Image 1 (cartoon, rainbow, N blue to C red):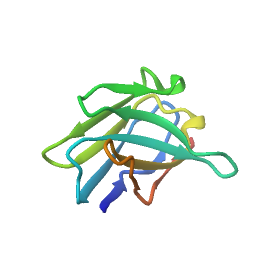
Image 2: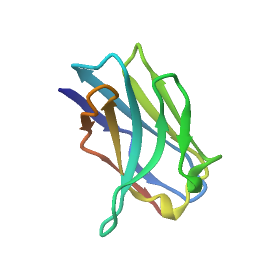
Image 3: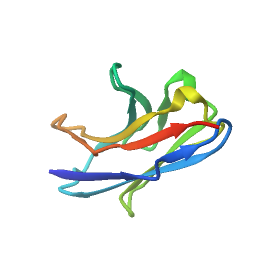
Length: 117
């Protein structure tokens, strides 16, 4: 089992920046990919950004050019740098680790991002 814990959420003004972090520990698989998801009440959880086992990244269209995902393999930390934040970015953000071999998924508990002036 892998434990994940997000931090860094909070209140940000439109156009501002926020940096989310996710630390992971436990039985970390040898090959895995990690993602940031977000969810607002009444809607399905949606993938925001992904970092692949070889370090590539993918983003949903609405955050391209504004968000950056990065992973510190040694430090076991996943980050999401959010720039030029928009009101529609407000959500609970979750990090997820997926074992490539078994497809097992592990989620964090989420961190709230509120966007308001």
